[in-house]
Length: 281
Image (cartoon, rainbow, N blue to C red):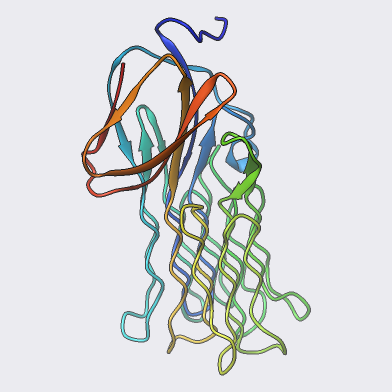
C-alpha cells in the first residue's frame, strides 16, 4: 500500500519507548522497550510494519521510569509500559541488588549484581543486562541496541547503548541502559549507555544518576546496598500524521507538535492516567 497523505486511512509513523528500570545497589537498570516503524527497532529488529489509521479514538500511555533502590527498600523497580494504539513496549528491568541477585527481565534487562547474571530483554525491543563478573562491581543494564557490559577486573559495567531516531526531524538517541555501581575498582561506576542511561555510582564517591526523562534510559547502580540507585527515565510516544489530519488529546496528556515536511509530528511526554486517548480526525 502506498503512503497516503491526503485521505483516510492515514499513514502513521510511530516511536514508542517504555520507562526505564531503576538502578539497584550494584546492577544498572535496563532501558525501556523500543519499537518503531520509522527506523531500526530495539533488540536488533528492523523497522516494523507500516501503520494506517482511520479517524477514531486510540489509546496512548507514556510509561513512568522505575524508582531506584533506596537504603530502606533494598530493591529497585521495573519501568512501566508505554502504549500507542496496538503497539505496547515493556518497561525496563530493574538491576540486581546484593551478591548473587540477578537483574530482572524487561524491555531491556537489568544488569546483575556481582556474581549474578543480567535479566533478559524482550524480543524486538531490547537486549539483556550484563553479568556481574567481579566482587562488589555490578553489570550494566541492557540497551535497545546492545547488551549491558559485563564487569571484570578492567571493565566497570557500562550500560548498553540505545537507538537513534530522526522521527522528530533531528537525530535523538533513546533507551540506553544504566551503568553499574562500583565498590571495588578505582574510579567511578559504569557509564550510562548512549540514549539517556544513568551513570553508575562509586560507594563513598560520586553517586549514580537517573535515566534521562523521556528517553526510557535505565537508572545507574549505586555501589552498595545501603545507598540510593538512580531512577529510570520516563518513556515517550512520538507519532506523525499527514498535515491534513487532526489529533485531539484527552485532558491528561502532555504533548507538543511540530510540522516536519508533509507531516505533523506529535511528541507525548506524559499521561496522567492509563485511560488517556488521542482522537484522530
